[in-house]
Amino acid sequence: MENLENIELINRAKEGDSTAFETLVNQNYMFVYKISYRWIGVKEDAEDITQDVFVKLAGNIKTFKAAAAFQTWLYRVTINTAKDFTRKNEKIRQNETTSIDEVQVKYDENDDEISLSEKLHKLIGRLPTKLKETAILVFSEGLNHKEAATILDCAEKTISWRVFQIKKILREFFGEKEVL
Image 1 (cartoon, rainbow, N blue to C red):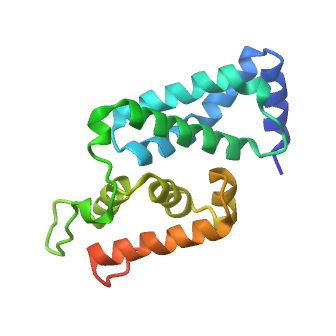
Image 2: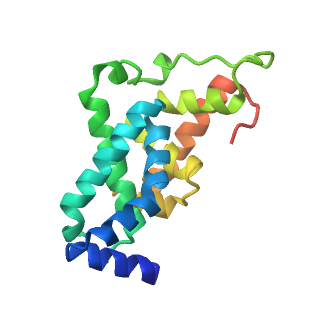
């Protein structure tokens, strides 16, 4: 159930109250930035995506329907904006892969330079788009399969299959070492 304060802010913002909209932005900025950064892995690009999300939010707040939670809607807008950003920027597209064999991440237990968490983040960042968005929502954001399916507009079984595939890929790169 949506927080009553959020509902009030959303309703006021829909009516053109700039203070209410500013409060929504302030309350959700880090949420959007965190998702953007996990998607793109570059601070400046994540900031650009975050700004784009709030520009879209300003233009589309009137279309928000309370049928979905505001945060669910914001997840969708953020992920779609990150995907659009990726498509528009060639240097980022070069880092995306189309097959698991193209992912270039090695795991060396003696490598003190890069933490396991950083290696995991790099690997997830190089997954094909549908696996990447699932990994961010399920593993990084801690959403359950049903919540992720709602945001990504697919069946819960699809999310379960993607999670299975992600874990399989992680085992291939990190061995049987438990990473999730």
